[in-house]
Length: 485
Image (cartoon, rainbow, N blue to C red; front, top):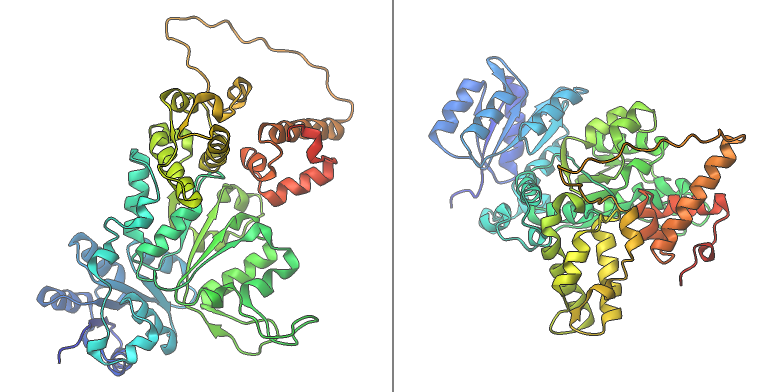
């Protein structure tokens, strides 16, 4: 019976090449080998492979040369690159060039088998099954064609088409992905789409809000602990990394992670292993890291609040989720999708719809809270309307809200606007008190606009719920100060 997978191993050191070959043969793969870029290209010219495993340094070139050739020819082989220990730059360069994953020397054979199995869409355990039992993922699933996860990213704008296309391209690899965008743009939807389109779709997807975990619990939550490790540890408990084994770990609001925890996270990513609190030995982990933030991490690095080495590890591939105001043409499609979901959750048919006047009214609002704010608004409108058709007045958007939004009417080109009036104001005698009073006024206004919903008000100001609570407590703001419900 012919083998399900054939692999090409490229390394100029005969002993290492033999070690890799024997390891893979024991796993049930068929293996060809080459000692240089030229020999590897000759093998590739004769046949197709399931994956190419190549050393970075070769006598007549580098592993990157092979990666670029595979990419330029549009070949389907997954590539795994082996780099020297500590050469993070080479590893990142390989991932950006299209490598599925990388390994560092000296290669841990258990990790080697796991990465190869992951590249082929198999669990490490599946590699021990008879060859006929191991099957690669279907091409439709691998390509993500018409995938429901991509369809959930509603919108026909160029920006959204680019987001979906990028997700399809990067889902097949292991490279860490950073999802950037303002609060409320749907960054978790992107992370879930990356997971569901990938070969890891049948494995766990674990989402973690890094800003919502108390600092003293971070290590236990991420890496787990052993029974008796501390007071209250009455049983062994797995952390986020162990829970995501074989799948995807989504680190939301990664910019809120304290520096001390950033160091521990970096080591876990580099070593691909974690040590639970109270344990002696480390546990190998096989997870893909997807992170997200509404902050500018480059600025955070410059100001010393985020580790530069961790930033480079996480930001190998960046997916930017555009704010709603940059894709106003998608508003109708997004509203229809949200209303369909509301109707489905409520068991209502047919789904409510917006009148033309209501949609036009929404299109003139800037949505500082992005899609999340739109969803909250539509949930409220459905309740207020009590009918299939949602009218303009059901939206609850007062004219004052437009004055505070980022949308502003554009003056015709032939109208000459008067010069701005610059008001000379006296300097405050107590700057700290003045800034606190100003911050208090802004937060109270945001709460009033969002009917005392702290999450929505915080999103409108670019703050997490945790940050919003902190500021309200520091400034002595009670929900009743904003009026409303």
